[in-house]
Amino acid sequence: MISRHKILQKENARTLKLPMDQLQFLQQCAGFESKVATLYHHYSNLFADDESLSMLFKKTAVEEENHAQQFHLAIRLQGTGMTAVKTDVTKASANLKKLEEIVERLTVSTPFPEEALDMAIRLEEQVALLHMANVVHFQDAGLKQLFEAMMAHDNGHVTMLKDYREVIRMGKSVMEFY
Ligand SMILES: [Fe+2]
Ligand SMILES: [Fe+2]
View 1 (cartoon, rainbow, N blue to C red):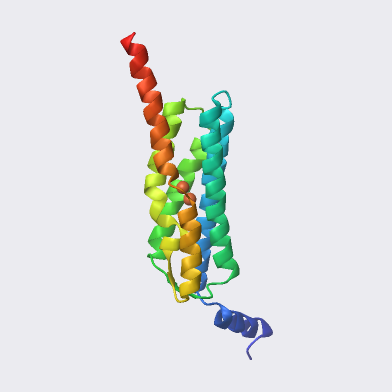
View 2: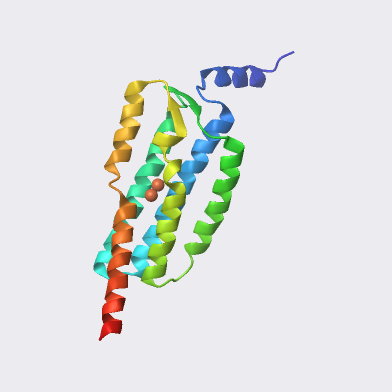
């Protein structure tokens, strides 16, 4: 006899547009974005004395929170309008787990500004491809546009982090000059 639980499970599986492991991966992506946001808030607090650096990290943290929200939206839709997650979920999930551990360690570290910028830039370069608009194949063109628009809204924080690092480096070389 098939249990009520089994029937419910089956019905659930039918209403999900993406398989469970893919939805779980989106959940992991959301969690990761939140962890990166926490790291940037930590940097923002750490450099509270330097108002522009502190604000830069705060702004970047808020953008990462938006990325997490985009994944949460996709999860709430349970994959409606999406056909598949593009990557090999098992591999991507293992890689993300390693990155998560690095981010957690960084979140309790106290680097100098230039080091913090360096870490953030390296992190951003590694995870740029992991955003919602890139991770999922869309069936619904409108939904695809929506996610791409949210992505475009994120106005290149890597460039801003790099610019600020350049300012610090130039400041240093000016000091050496005198
Ligand atoms: Fe992000
Ligand atoms: Fe980012």
